[in-house]
Image (cartoon, rainbow, N blue to C red; front, side, top):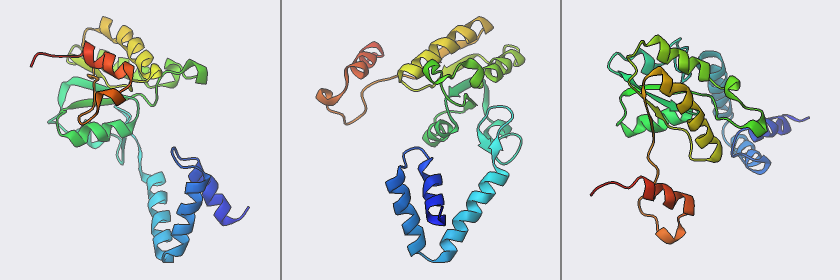
Length: 197
């Protein structure tokens, strides 16, 4: 297999990148200066060598504890549970959440053989137990998909007996959307989550 085919195959394994896009990316790299390709290779090598999951929450960082878990200003009483580390960044960019996170590493999907044992559920429950009542709220920020909802329902059943309040992110109609183009399940969620004006 040629070097180009090898890189195309590896890039195609990334989510959202098919063989066609991977081929375009490789050709773009090859059109540019060789230093650009080497810089990318060094950055990927550094990523593989230095970045690892946080021992406490599962987010990515370069130390045993990620920057969020090391931050003494974070509110220890609120824990936001997300499916992947990508969602941590999305929530952090809003600047509105000051609690801690817990990364599950996916969502329940029995058809794909992903049960609670394949996710970081045990770590979540141990964190709540180990906090000895200091965790007062757990926000379930799983996706609104069938698997995400099933994961939230499962987690709620496991967390509630431990004492914290269990909440779910609100769902609704995105700003700027036309109601006629919004799917039915989003409208149902928006109606259920309506609030006083």
